[in-house]
Image 1: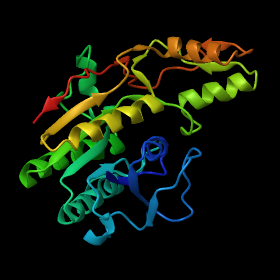
Image 2 (image 1 turned 90 degrees about the vertical axis):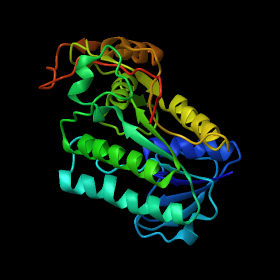
Image 3 (image 1 turned 180 degrees about the vertical axis):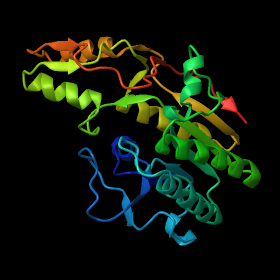
Image 4 (image 1 turned 120 degrees about the vertical axis):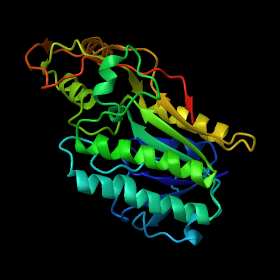
Length: 283
């Protein structure tokens, strides 16, 4: 099977590349330039294409069976402007999808974010995949708008598309300012770690578990009998507080320093519970 992949040099994309290539999948991967580096060491290399994602003609897709879109613009704070986020997270990918469709690809997987739900997530014990989208900043707003457009596009074109909204993904290769790498860096340096009270409830999923779920979706979607358009939240189904998560990481790393809950205030508008319902929603 041949996969066309965007976002292969990103955190999640790098792990997906490593897993899929080691499983024997053939992958054509898009990157901005030869200078773009994967976030982890990978055992094999895909066939790289060094071009902007909205400039590809149908001959670049190499008879791929499925397109997996993991590329994202400005996915971490501070976010880019709304206009730029819409350009790179909606308009340009839609051009890519149309080129892929003209090349004969009729199966698509799109990576989304739990933050598309925004404020509506506060009204659910477990956020369903069809919850209203009420994002509060530019990046998740652009992803929410893109998800609506991509799902409607798939329905109109009569092709299969799985929109997978990822919850709190962590692991090697993650942006160094995020929680897990910050914890790890402090633990390995024998430093104390100041943090919030940590009462926020989240669904943390290891990146290796996440990419395995994406590969399972590839197998499911490429079954010739499975023609569908759906939304699915992707998480561990094991919610815990940020303090519980931090204590687990701290213990696993045999940290000599101390966690210091309460040393940092919560962010303004902090959402205290953000947990997914993992049941898919078919459109």
